[in-house]
Image: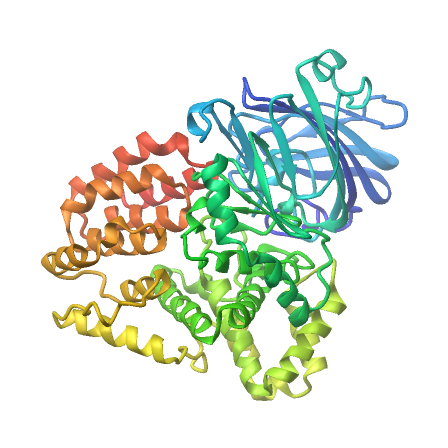
Length: 610
């Protein structure tokens, strides 16, 4: 076996899957999917074919032409990171048909009961496949090295609707014989089929759908916002994201044509574990990015930038994750600079710099994960997910831009995107391309230190701007007992407060914290970034009067950006047993409202500090 990826059973000597035809029957009563997957290979193959699965029941594996069974085996003991190896024996086959069912514990799926949705009437389900969770929905080569096209039939209750990161073909009655599943089940009168197709090859982690009571509003000729939360959420989302069409046009001017036809958004329930997920044609968003002042569009700018860096050009493995996120963070800030101005982009960079320095503390006992190109064998990508690939990756690209000048770097970026579009590449491929297209760059920038070195390189640069410098100065004054005056913060929005709070020391006088909140009501902020940044400082400073707000926050949202620091603040360092018991109780009561990925992250935090 010659693995192509430390997080996949995919064998580099076997042909990759190039197309998957899926028929998926969604059973909300049992939180399972019954499905069939027709996998088409890049060439005929004889011998074993290795596929990734996790918590799947394999009913049968068939020759698609004769429907005769093919020999297969499923590893009896799942690997805790990789899942179970499905090995199928082929004889000059160029395709294989697999019938399967998911588990209610599928790591990619969150099934919400009606009581967990805004309508309180209908259930809801959505996917989150990054980093290695597509394998818990259907058998596949679950590595970004293997890009696939797909077609999908989603059989759902007639009262619901479906969206997908793909082109919507039709909504229609089920047809007998189309699914390789039971016609009595598939063609029941209360069911409907939503049909989709993705004609561009994508890595499996970008496979995404959601099903429930979903409404929408058009934002522009190729942009639309969908939401589960009804009219109130749709109205707020429409206002927050009104400028998205202009962002797409700016992205095209900077990085070349937008190759995905549509750029739609789906605002998910509060349990969604990320800020956004860049699924092509259908970006998934947490409702916490709706802030009421259009600054939430910066998350959209990041996911839009992925349309070029991440979706068009993809990291070959998670060890090359910076190729997705470092490039996208750079591209996001270029878009923000044009749409919202240089000061706003500088604030974004400042928050990122603070995040990067914080990651050095987080990984001080394992600096491997401060590298851009770390060794991740036997490491779950979700456990070490951090700001390093985003912010150190950004700093690397910004360093190159400063060396050669922005016009030259813009030309390099466009050439890079045009050269590798719809491909998955590794770090060495990028470095070779860099040195070929920017001759002598390795003598001007220490590429190896940036890519293979730990920590923050000496030629990284903290951003400089008037507002950034002012906020940093006010944070230093707070350490000396001085609170910012109202006239100094009169024009501050969420990002300014976030940067201010991020630069406060981890622990300060509880009376100072209470006085700051009494004046500016930060614990009650509508901006979740501000609220959580404040509560993190409050908990670290031992302000017990905010424990109730911390509990309410941890029970309201499932975004890991908020769960990780708040649970960590409760249990780490010199935390008393009272705080640790509080954290465990909150998690026990909130666990079922979190996505499985978030559940695993919080469990890891609690076990580490038990």
